[in-house]
Length: 214
Image (cartoon, rainbow, N blue to C red):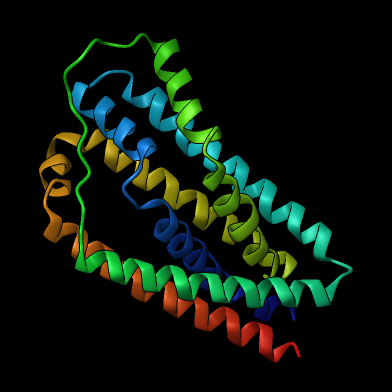
């Protein structure tokens, strides 16, 4: 059984990667701040590292904490799986709706420069003082990751954390190339369409998992 489950490790990693990317790729203050630092070429490495590490720790805490909390409550685990499937379906629908009325992600490169401490303090504020980060990484990603078999959770966590590292790395280090792209509504239409379809696929997979456990 363990061997067959480990054969599904790439799927668990990809599920974590797709889920995390779908949730993190959005127009928001944290992304705009990382993009700004990239445009200014100012403390990009520490800011990217902080944002990625914070996400990784929150995801790990969410998955392992939810797994422990749900370990002896299969009924609650199934209910959360169904709620997660519903959330992802609605989230996917909203992403497809956004694709029809796409916005822009702008980050001015001007203004006063920030010292490293100030830049990290702002990164921490944008990351940790946003209530949505806890709903996304701890509750939603945590409850979905907790549905994975115990030996696959590390792969799910690695995939979700890798998504954050890739995204923030692209925003920070690729800012000068990506900024014009993010300023085009057409690009966000394509991106939101892909996110919406991905969320629907993940919702269907989670729903199947919940129902086959009945």
